[in-house]
Length: 256
Image (tube, rainbow, N blue to C red):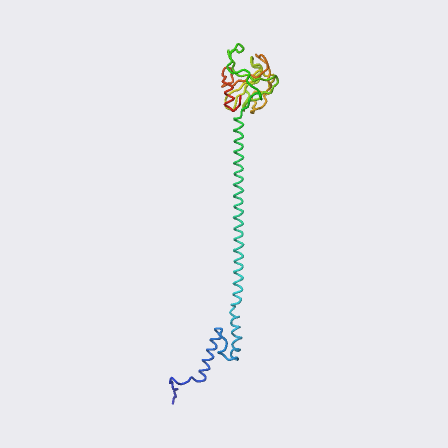
């Protein structure tokens, strides 16, 4: 005959059932990390060691240490990369500035060279330093075959240094009849200048001359009444193409 157990609501659980329930509860609390007053000292001690072992076995502490170390390495790498990037940018900027300075310096040198060349091309000086015009242009008289003076005379003792008035090339250097020893220079602007009655000639045909360069010495050779420098400005190398030499020199910045 089979027996059944009453299931009334006031029936207490059996001792075995209560024990099983208590053990399950304690195990649950121990797993959750709560080991304390709810368990007996012996039972707490019994479960304390396995709980600690459980935490250690999970590798949680090790994972935290490894994680911190990895973060440090990543941070260090990021810092190193940032430093390298900053250094590269600084180097690139320094290079850019150096190139800009070099470019500006080259441009400044080129400007200075162009200005020096422009000045050299356009600089004019008086043919005799610290002198004055003793006979003016177109002065009339029997002394000149044309009936008037085709140039101007600068006061100068014999042997006074005569200068090229500007940049040019010598097209005549030698005896010029009534002009005595003379020099004719084709100027850089296409005009011509002539220097007559020289006591000596210091240049030759085809030679380039600079503004202020010595080309000879004044004298009284040719048709002259005394030592001086005869100076002409011309539109061509030949006689009869003369223009006003005072206006010519003044137009080129020479005070006459």
